[in-house]
Image (spheres, rainbow, N blue to C red):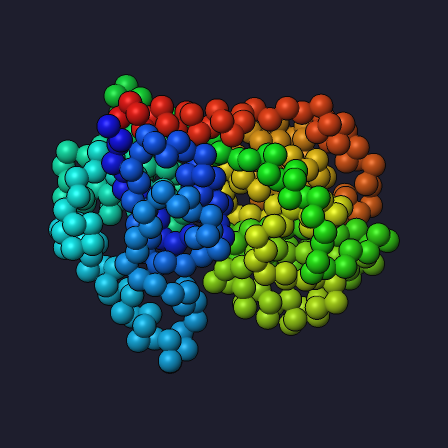
Length: 381
């Protein structure tokens, strides 16, 4: 008999967790599971990639509203109030939207849905959580709040650092056994194939080094730091270009900042593209300027494409870059980003050992293993 699973996530916009969830769903055998995917907002570039056998449901429809323009406020307020109402009175949601369906497993695909799943009126279902961020760096997540995740039957974490956080907060062996580390499913063959497509929206200059950074545009990703460092290095006469690929609620702020710093000729914000890999391939360096992460899957994409990498020392980076064998790990600060980029521009030869290690490197996981590991957890809950 098929296991009935409810999965909850905010939307299917272009974030790492959303992409990983879609990759997982695309590689599941459809004859084993009956899945309802409940979105707060029916929105996002990955909607088209949801397998047709997965039943997509939603609380609200339409694009995310990231501004406070007067004409958008009524709709924005309605959405927020509606979602809060259903969060406070989950029985309404389960009766009306979910038609009193009895699920075997309720699965929060990101940490932000901790309460929604824990407050479910279904006491018989098993509760599964997937954590993609280092919660010690996320505002409001005190040790007491993080301990609430132990109310789940299983907590999947994506890096050693996150695993260590949970193990340090566990009070007994039973709690420790709830924490399981699983590498994110990543389709390396798809990345290599897509990287061969032509670049259509940007002109690379073979005489000027380009640093590419890919991610959702919000403060966590540190694009503001990247632009300030870019300006500093240009002022010192070190010519280079910056290419930021991605969209997000901070996009307009970062774009305005780029203009105010006088960087419109040298820094480009491409917005979202469903295939960033040709841009990865042609850029000279990949730079991760994040303030915090869980396990930045984008680095595995850069590793797959054998890019010269500069990354701030956030959760997962040492583990992924093998403590600095596969790329340059810098201090998690503006100075750190500055030093890494300056090294790349003034001493490019120092990146040769990274390339040699990358050429011999074999991924510590594959797509099939990751999907099978998650299926094993689901099947044994």
